[in-house]
Length: 226
Image (cartoon, rainbow, N blue to C red; front, side, top):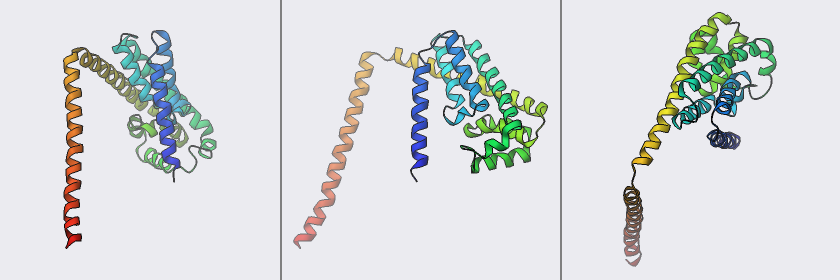
């Protein structure tokens, strides 16, 4: 029963560590690492450990810090997503049955549902899958397994990769710029006021809980005397 929780916590820890590690890159190494992580998500099923969206957002944050160029980073993310999904498609077409017989795909209800969606919707399911964390890692391979024509797959994959790559990189850029602006606008006095307000609120909640507890105990004590 504890396995899903442990897996989630481990995955979150890995993602947090890699995010912190990525933020120290700049220039060509930043493009290379972000691109590799986005590529590997579907091509190597690495999305079970590190979602590609995390790498794309971090790429945008790096652009906001002027460690990389935003337009270049968006291009790297989009191309890596499209190429990675194409490799995943080929892997699924050639080694799909073997992969389905091994972890983490073996017996997965989510995989079965995704296969069913692909069989019903075809290309549109490829596009939608690009914006769903788990599906993004397995849809290309399952599309290759299902016999979906590569030409159809590539069209929907390219459209999804373009919107996804540009969108998440821009999200990271906006978040990075906003955080920097907020920090620069906050004076020391503002920070002190926020701290005092926070302490006052906590003290008020503790005081209120204390008196509520005492109020509940008084009727009980009176009842025992009678």
